[in-house]
Length: 165
Image (cartoon, rainbow, N blue to C red):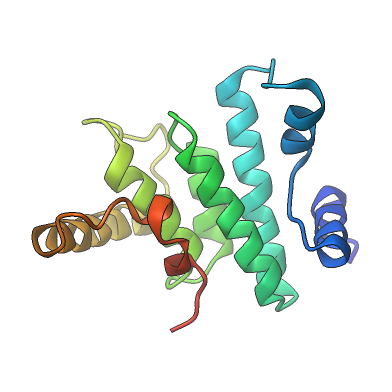
């Protein structure tokens, strides 16, 4: 499809034929060891790539690619010390439906990882993000009251983000 990112389609084709979903950043880590790029820049670029992969999987209605993309994104987010950028949040909210598991993942990262004041984004153009953030914060608090050892969802139960009921 001409309007789709070549890099995303290449990732999709590789995943389709090998069953493995990975990014150029993972390939570089395998070949060269830990990234030498600015960590924050590399992470945000990779996260955006994975979010685009998820949206592409949704567009072509490939649930397996969506699951592999979001699981990889959750795994990469869990390994990081950074929060998703305004660019990533804006992309996710402009490209997904209100009940998207990808939105839930991004919100969960903020709910469980953000320090005080992190919700003050530079360009808070997406009011829906803040509504979701409040909703998922409330859900997380209620679950933690009843299930003390539940753990952080994107680290312990990525099935939450697979979109099946």
